[in-house]
Length: 392
Ligand SMILES: NC(=O)CC[C@H](N)C(=O)O
Image (cartoon, rainbow, N blue to C red; front, side, top):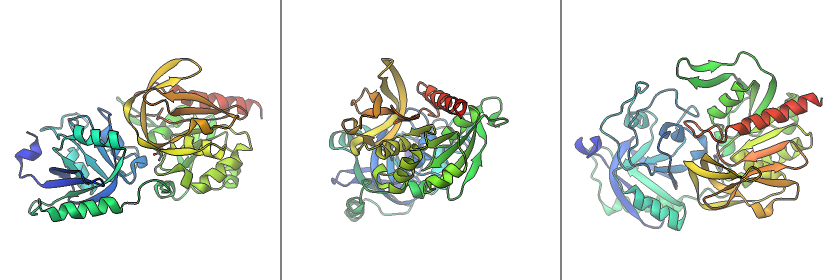
């Protein structure tokens, strides 16, 4: 029995748009949350997942049964707030134990005003999502003194789930983006010293922030990139005025095809032959700008154990993934080459332009807390910038 069940438990319900109902224990804040329900198979990294802006408008189910074991801290974050709409877990363990822990997961969710549900059969929920596809859903987490199991609240939750418009066609990147350009100098976390500060740089990278995960910026800073982060709607002309050695297109939430301003700016930037690297949403936007199409996947890829084939090398990488849309390989124009494919469902995972120094990766080479098999993709971006500098 979890600590929640031992305490005076607050009840919660999760209702999917197809009418499936789960009764569980409320964790985090009291209230209602509506969004697309997805499942993530990572065993660790719940704080990084919650703070990943790409989870905007999504309710995240973690399939690993014990979540919260190592508590939370102020460092293991991918942005300044929790972006996931709500959290669904099987069991919140009795103790949070880690020398870096500052707050339990339950307290952390409460302090960020995020609702959650525990003590439900997450295997059953995952089966529903895997077989029927990602579905919209609603969680109602009741306060301690609420009378809860009424069918009224199930009806309220069902109506809210069915009224959610869905992620297709939603442009969320401009909402997750920063509002003003700024520089980024923080480097990766080390056990002895925590996060570091960049001391010298060799390349100037302009990073489009569509909801950027901080570890991407840290890994670029580690590799000698002086970084100017710019808002999602920055024009190509404004980026070119910064005289970048390379342009980075970040991850981000929502439907890539809805980000017309970004697709237009990237199309214009491609004409200047400056190295461009896109991750996840950035990869999808690069593909769209070059004439490919994106589609909504049945239940997407969310986890830290996804095998991806490097087509040219014939090597398999274990990768971190978080996406619900994908570039349709069949739609690639002749000047875009497929470089990586998912070994779960054969969907496209990487592209490289044959006529420009531009490439994209669907997974997360910056993954924190890993895996790190795809990290060498950052070196490829550095190599392209070196060549570009040498040719100037
Ligand atoms: N992590 C991301 O950048 C996600 C990209 C896009 N929003 C998708 O769901 O496919």
